[in-house]
Image (cartoon, rainbow, N blue to C red; front, side, top):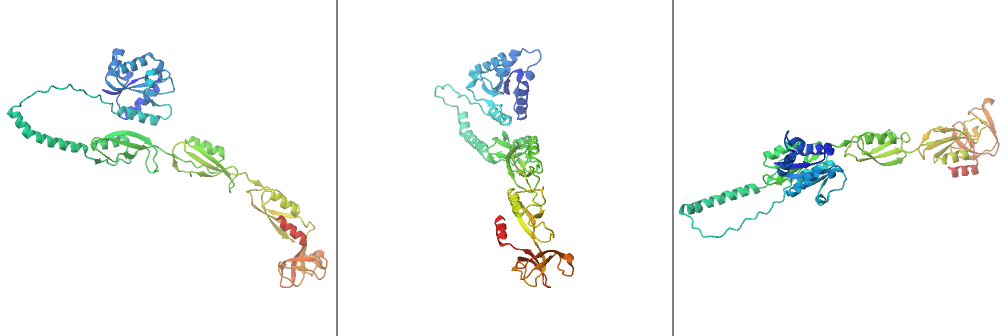
Length: 440
């Protein structure tokens, strides 16, 4: 006797073949017209015999099958014969009224879940019909002596044997370890231990060490003799590819190619090329479930440093701070020219791309030079007691070192001090200094 008879439309043959293949692998015997009707046999008689000799009937529901006369005749005959009918929904369609009230298995979305449910439903025991035995009329009977002796001595022995057999069948045994075994090997191990294979479920394991396609869990851990043991097989996980350094479009394409989704996109500043991926979560080579999301961290657009060389202090500081950059001002009197009060150098240079709040150092040409002051330490602010020639070197032996002159009473700030009395100074203006610090 076959486990199931399959009623279907030939237009659904490919989908039905896939289901038959899955059921056969799970040890379910299937009756189908193309394989079980011999040459020269009467088709209608063979169909009736197939339905009569099966335990359950699968009705494949589709837009084609619900209008098929043959399919309608088959499940109608099965209902007349009080067969256990399992409707199987292959696609969304109008289910016939007489089948709509039955619990159906839907293959519209998740095939793996549906085939597991269908297998379990086929294997489930049908409700047994309550046997009704006619009441026997009581009558007096006196057994012969040999029969009485047999009852006297044989009955206790039979009771002992029955108790032993009852204990054997109800004794709990520990299910053997099936971890790491293929489904077929697990079935063989169970049979060798007087147990049977129950429901086979494919699902993801939380442990990356569990190999795909192998058993990683069983239920229950203890069972009675010949009980069915459910096993859980680890589904294969996906290794997360490395997308760091790619742009957003390239990263999304690579993730989709391996069956993963892109999760949240976070745009942040980082020391990497702008618009590139600088971090991902989960990290590369992590094993995850199919269609799992991967979060991408993208480098924010960089700031292009403006050119402030030639600007005065106020203009340079304003231009850099407008770009959300940090400014450091360096006073210099080593530019022996007349371009005082202007920026003559900057670092990094104009045009470079940096993150916000990046430090930009600018050099301001101040009026000053070497004078033979003879006193004062670095950082001191002093008032000159006479006029001085400003020189580009601490040497008074030649007129060639003179670059300008400093009048008597000038306020200067000492930048460098030599033991021989020479001082490198710059002109000091208190009001300008206060304004400069306010800007910075």
